[in-house]
Image (tube, rainbow, N blue to C red; front, side, top):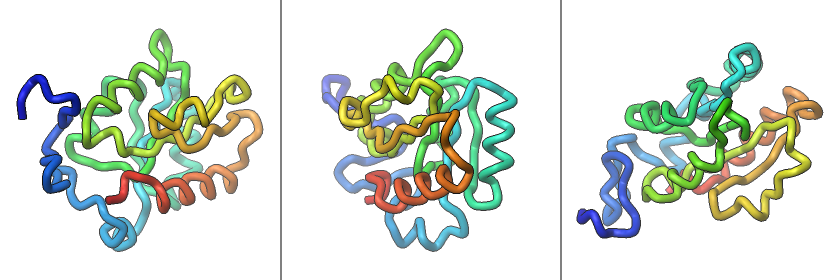
Amino acid sequence: MTDDESLRCHSGLDPESNQSSHGSRNKSEMTNREKLRILLLEDDKWLAESLFEMLRDDFEIRVVNNPEKVFDVMETWWPDVMLADVVLGAKNLFVLLHEMQSYVDTRVVPTVILSSISQQISVSDLEKFNVRKVLDKAKITPDGMRQALREIALKGEAVK
């Protein structure tokens, strides 16, 4: 690949063959796994631990506390969905989503936003970043979150 191509690969993906060092990304591979994979991006340590405990029986979860670590995780472990907060300390999720769109492999990861400012976020405005759902931290139930994650993972574009 050349530097002037508009879409680059973050790691290991041959855009011509859709093969990746992340492993197969097709529905049969996903359904053969015991659990769907969720990458949780949350900078609040207490909330991240609480969400991990709440979801770990139903999903395989990796937790990162800042956006820079998302790409590190994706080097070796491919999520079916990313669950992320918007406000991440001094940073925000939109910078990460924009960067993910610049790589042919990471732009297909569906994202579910979990935020206390969910009323201010429009899914339709964020579809170009592959945001599929916005959940309100104050109103979402554990069952509602599990259902939303399963729904998005099973019909998400991360599956080719």
